[in-house]
Amino acid sequence: MRWNKLPVVHQLRQSVGLQRGMLVAGLILTGIFLLAALFAPLLAPYGYGQLRSPDTGLFGATQPPSSEHLLGTTVGGYDVLSRVIWGSRTALLVIVIAVTASLFIGVLLGLVSGYFGGWLDRVLVVIADAVYAFPSLLLAIVLAIVISGGQSSMIGGVLAAALSITVVFTPQYFRVVRAETVRVKAEAFVESARVIGAGHRRIMFRHVLRNATRTLPLIITLNASEAILTLAGLGFLGFGIEATAAAEWGYDLNKAISDVSSGVWWTATFPGIAIVLVVLGMTLVGESLNDLADPRLRTRRRAAEVSGDTASTAQTSVVPGGALPGHAAELEGGAR
Image 1 (tube, rainbow, N blue to C red):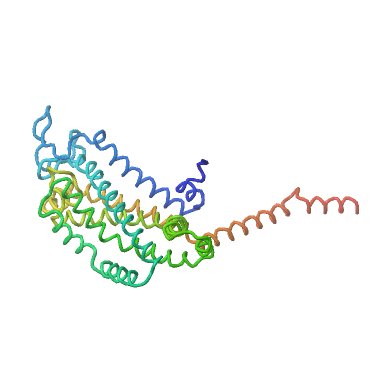
Image 2: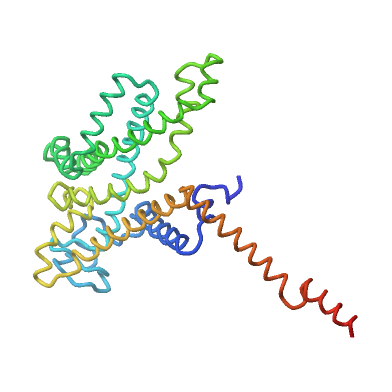
């Protein structure tokens, strides 16, 4: 496989100017987030719930940034840098569970609804519209309370946040796949497959599904950033994970509210910066891929390339030493 045919590399080669800068910046920020989440045990100087060091003893509450604690400590005595790094792992885990579950459920329901239609399609559309019209954060709060049952453990908190976000995201994938399925099933190749005797399952998963999910990677990147904001919102409102169970940026922001008025700025600044940078990176990637997938922008880019080639050809024909000036010089020499 050639490297320039890979999805991200292909879009990166297509991008130009400011669009390429946005895509590169988004990929760098997203890559840093993924590396921090995957290698958190190696990058974090302490554990997410660690309160003391074998050498210096207790960390101490609200200690300012120093050589021992680069980003200071929280009011509970936790190392801020370690909490920020470990929080990226919690966010990535929630993103993977929520996006995977909502993608599987939404694509399956959208494919069945758009292909068969009828009363099933009408019922699923009404349910999806009702869930989609409901405020997403309020729905996530209600579902988090129902699912977690007041528990704030690592597994319970992550699953509660992930499943609540799944319910919010599923209608988006359902509506996109359903609309594409309705369009694709009317194509000539689908009718040809029916004529030769192909069954519904083969047509749905072999022909329709492949052509109805081309825009999903763009939605996944945007939903990943929205999942982080929803998770942080749940933690900030008090429905997050306890500090002794896992690190979560929204929970840390909630506990740092009283610190800001006391002049302790580092406990809220760095978790907030982490949320902003990660969401910004994923949003830049999603918006850049969305622009590159727009056929109108591709047409404009091709027209600009053609006009640029025409201009360069015209410039070559009039530069000194070119074909036309040389021919004129020969005629001038002959006249003399």
